[in-house]
Length: 482
Image (cartoon, rainbow, N blue to C red):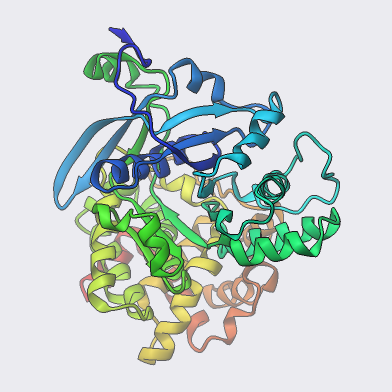
């Protein structure tokens, strides 16, 4: 078995066009994989310089392999099982600004650099007023980026052609809007001047993006087998699902410079990210939240097994295709194609997604992922969506605690105030109707009084009665066979 480096594998030298803040699994299995495809299928011809955004990270491990690594994609694509390997060679080098600040700043002096891409976690796009312009580097990611942009502005004497295109990939709605505001805050805090601010506003573009690919990360269990398959001692292998989606809120001219969509990739340049954000939350995250308590209380622990179950699978299909999809405004064919891809992701034979992990903070997840759909369905159809309501009842039943019929414990994982309140209501209510009203009217749980939704408390109570008397699986069976 060979070591993985430039002496044992091909690595193409290309212009460094992308500065990437972050060296983690997601960016390497998503963005760098996409850039590799762009290099193969278009005239992009660009490499990536990775900047470690925090003091401790993985760039030493990357550099040890000359920034070469494999992406192992697993899943179902158009009904076919995929388990592929691809050598990624687009990262030219990786540097740590905490160790070599000068090398970091010199990136701003490279005329061919055009893009900045980041994934510094949701906590990364924050304004930290304790950062100073003289810090080497500023502790926050937006602070580091402001330092870099200012150096570029000074070095190129305000040349408007040297502005950068910035794609944040952090999982924050309208992430680009937030990052842009924070950079402006640093410009003001550090008194960097109006001339620089105008250069930033007029020459640089910060675009909101939505990214979607499940990336389990390093394959600890299968690494020996994987190394045998690829015949390299690759210690930076990263696994991801076959599905990928990158929505970028930018004009079509940006797609010409960053030709991902022209390379056969699922990368969309759109006027507004919002409908796609809503689509993902509604059709991917929403069903996850609803199916998890229904599946678990039916004796099923894995998302894939729930979807392949004769009864629970019909329930999941109902809430996706008959209810949630009816609440969205994108073209019908586009929604159906996305729903089909969600189903393939749910039944991915390579990912054992525990439903209990999805049940973390299930009440707040229902509020953001499913409550808007429930309201919109009722607004459009004039009736409550029975599948969504059953999922809500299942959450309340799950928070009762105790154990399943097979003896497996039911352990709600949420703030103690929510768990204690719902358990207390279960212990002291004299009827399911009383219980339903007391839980649904608690604004601390749902951010509003859900008993104000016509008929909801009564329908939840009816489902709770059925679950209590006949069991979850029998309740679901009655619903899907109507």
